[in-house]
Image (cartoon, rainbow, N blue to C red):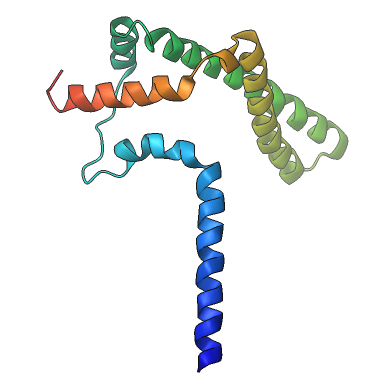
Length: 148
């Protein structure tokens, strides 16, 4: 009996340490918890809503605009990566499932490389994109609740 409680105690301590370890590494998610952990989800927003925020916030608006521009780099990289890897796979193997998997993997890799290019080209590493996104979510929450 004492052996069971000591093993449970060990597992509990191990689990708490595990949660603390990963909680520190993903602490940035706490910025979104106010918007995510809601009883009623936020309504969807449109591009015009985002443009309105960009125009209304002189501090975080330009950062959010630059972040939105970075998506185009990711999309372009994804298309180039997907088409080129699928084309090479199809050319050398004539395997439909191989070309399909190459299309998927190339799209993912291209998206990643596209974002890296955007990170350096648009100098996203100098901007606090998380703060801009959080401020937009707060702004949208206030606007959708009718307080703005």
